[in-house]
Image 1 (cartoon, rainbow, N blue to C red):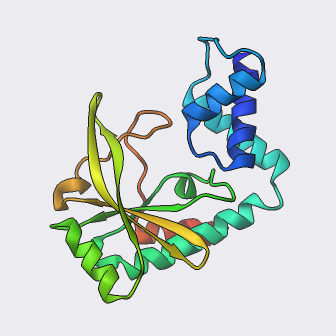
Image 2: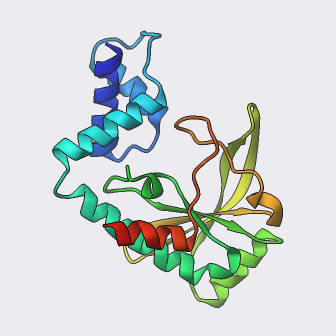
Length: 192
């Protein structure tokens, strides 16, 4: 049942664009008639099932969409280079689906510097916050800005200058979140 839930959650993530692993697990368990099960798969199991699902059922479209998202991410990172951007999330890990957004971490003395830069460049944006986990039980709300590049949503989460020292925790495995610099993303795009 655990494996079936992981496969169904992966299908839900891939097909519906639902970015939340926990919600996908609950929805999958409900679809399979086991809404009260306590033996849910881990996020890592779901991510592996998602990779397998995309390889089998989206082999024609997902790699092209991922390349497009990574290209948009690179353009955004170059545009925001003064804030030392780092790419994070499904676009970096390779599991991005059709409705994924580009997620970037930026570093500034004050979040207003990013807002001012966007205003000066005449980029319409929305302000918000992103809740990220640091360490075992420490959560922080960080300022976030969202805008659309072409048709691709981009989210900018702004860290303080010393935010590069400690990476937030990955929602998938709980380890330090992977973050890619501009050269690292250029290398990923050059690989294929």
